[in-house]
Length: 64
Image (cartoon, one colour):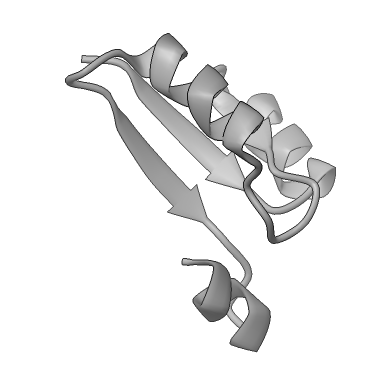
């Protein structure tokens, strides 16, 4: 099963990468486009999962 960690910006993505997580991408905002969703779905396949690593604030909760 593929797993992808999706974070809001490049800073947490860099930090997670530095800690050894190679399956992390930055959303670069709070909106996931249809094209981004399709790319993620194609990458993960039908049994994949996404871990949301969003900011602990109102916008992060809204995005989740």
